[in-house]
Image (tube, rainbow, N blue to C red; front, side, top):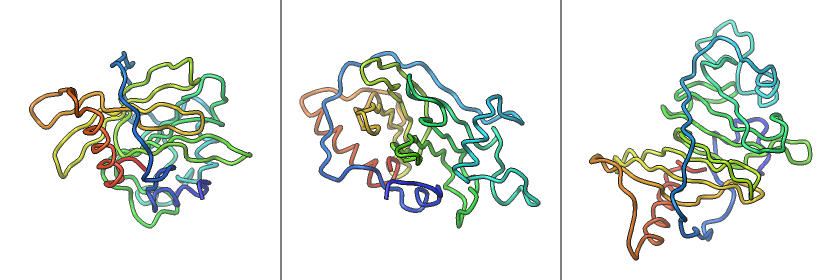
Length: 214
């Protein structure tokens, strides 16, 4: 089931829409991404719709006798932002969750890494259309798709490698578009040469296998 209410189902399964036979398209030119940073500060949301969305997702406590247990509905734990040009925020949004928080109704805290989950409303219900364990670091307007391209920083702790990965909206969900750059610890570099597509496909599968893309 792609329907995600409650959100606990996503945190438990870490699966991504689409089967293992999905083919990665050849990366295109490295265009400009607008930098995005999330510091999880502030005591209250500026947009009242943020609280409405969090209440529907049921991932946090509005009032809790023990605020150190389940995460409170606060900008210190969550950030909500739009990704589609023509949709209302409550119908299409990106949810960023602070690393290590304990979502309401979950059996345990999420791992010590940020979670970025993209939702769109279908038939009145919120559906996961993209999931990442990492940092959202860039967005790029895409007039053709009607939704922003996303740049995610995903870190493979086993290989001690940081990947900057681009994702594009295909009309139904976000799909992997390519590796913009990577860092093995000696500085960022890009993938070039005849084996670029093959290498990118291998990295994509590696990120999926380790649930950095779900």
